[in-house]
Amino acid sequence: MKLGNSGQECALQTAHIEKREEKLSQIRKFTLFSNTFMTVALDDIGACQYVLRVLTGNRKLQLKKVKTQYVFPQIDAHDAQLDVLAESMEGKIYALEIQRKDDGIDHPRRSRFYEAMIDSRFLEKGKEYSKLPDVTLLYICSGDFMKNKTSLWTVEKYQGRSGRTYEDGLCTQYVSAGIKDGTEVARLMEYFQTADPDDMSHGKLSERVHFLKCEKEGQKIMCEVTEQFWKWGFEEGERRGERRGEQRGERRGIRRGRSEGKAELKREIKNLIAQGKTPEEVIAIFMER
Image (cartoon, rainbow, N blue to C red; front, side, top):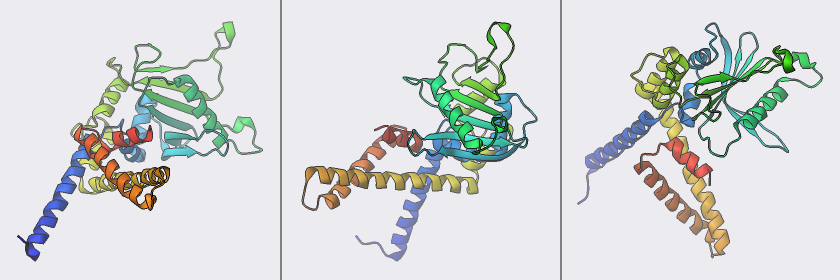
């Protein structure tokens, strides 16, 4: 049976609504440990400032600018990308990095690498080393890799047996997200794991999360982000298909490979989402392959 124009319009409208509801459902599942959601949420100065004030204990901290997913490009070395890089009104640098996996990762050396990249970025050629800004690296881990049983601890440096503090302008702090020790930092990490839009107990951060998950303009921003994810997925499917077609040496292999690659990736994505995976988690799975 053929649908009339009104019937076709109604069907298209229903499909559009269902697609939007699916996106909104995905958005509600995002947490602040989801790279995609965290990137959008902490790109807001007020929200980022709230997080840094809690983690540093500096209630008077005022940020001048914030950049999420800050990339340090290297021509002949390993690239670095920080989740958040912020500068205070006094010119101090605050870097926030969330490490979502603990297995097989050397966290201290990873921190050292990030700190080196920050220093190289903020010391211009020909400038004195005294011009290096103070840097605080806040490194969030999902577990407690040093077994300190505390939600926040600071790396302290001393001058040998004298006990005097060694100051070089660098402060490294580790946050163990899985530790519930009743501190404000632990409560913030619990909120990171839920990003509950109805929990308004975390100031500007809660306001930002509520905006992105519940308000029309915020939902529009997040829908655009998830749309970019799907676009990335199909482009990745085409690239895989091209490689497969070339490897098989089939006639018109690239064209056929693209089609097969798209179909296969689409099936994989649907299966993962059916298992309850968020778009961010799906991206992480494919990036690890």
